[in-house]
Length: 536
Image (cartoon, rainbow, N blue to C red; front, side):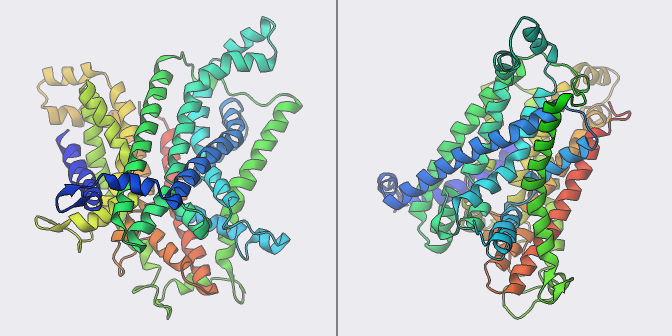
């Protein structure tokens, strides 16, 4: 546990504590009265209220839209099912900046709806809600659908034989079994939407602000650290409660069910009702998932003189707008370099943490397991700004170093590595290690010869997730990325923040490049997950 504890202490706890302390301490004295002062301000109460109700609305809307999809992917067997499963997961690994840009191309000024019917939804709450459903659709499909596919359908069939209607059988048999998975998915969606930053910043405009956006505004624009510190504590407390509820639902799901092989539960649709449901789900995927991405790609080619590569060619030059010190396309190479380093760090830290959690038990380790999830919910803006004010003195004078960005990105990647590798490591029979030790193998050789071959696939999947997440990290990177080495999300945000058709088109083109890189990573990951020939 030494490596992950040291990493989180130095690069997470220290920066977050420092920025909170700077905001709430004066001359060495804590000013806790500022908490009440900040939380009593009408503008802050409006931010808290909007953050909460939009997260609740986004969660409810996502469940309504995605649960039929979870059923279809779990119970129906149809051509292209695995490919479509990968496609609906693409939005989840896309950077929020790209999601915001895609919906801006669809719903914003000059977007598809504006051109066809004169309708604009940007700077409205509907654009935010739809983008959140787009982003979190895969969370419900994967979490609920994964469990649904393993539930024995004969239990529901037995209820039907005993006289229950289809709806009553589903309500009394299937829904209670799915309850923990639905609750876990809802909590995860609520967590992601409660801490939403890039989507709200691009689509909401000045009229809408979540806690994360307000922390960024108070920190970067107003330099009001006391207010930012209080909002960080509020978000920290809310995220802690959400993660505690999530851990409870996961434990219920792991201990309350008897599962079967998913290959035994998927069947071809029967009857007009099931075929209609399949058609509706495919239509939702087409309109909600593929249409925004398609419009984004189309806008990237729609130049002033017609369709062509005008905007892509513009990415190769610095230009005259002063937006960049280097050609925007250089951000592709920079992002890839940072993501590779961040992935290596995340694998080293997350792999060590997963191994420690596998070998040990007790409250201390369970608390450490929960701590590893905190970077997903604690304000990335706070972490990024904390890096600037803490890592600027020897022996950790990293403010001018390129390694600062991969370190911030790795913080977000570690939880994905742990969650991916932990179930596989726990499934390894400890007697295999004991047999290797009896035969004279050292602990290192036993790990290399026993554990590594069994967890190699999980390691590759974890690396894919960490790479995609690192590639799209925006909240912390926007503070610490150097002007001459911007990452792809930072470059897209800068282009969107400048007026003019050329800047807008370049943002679309650069977002398309980022989307393609993330999608390729995901498809490779999906192939690793489904190709099981001779590995286990």
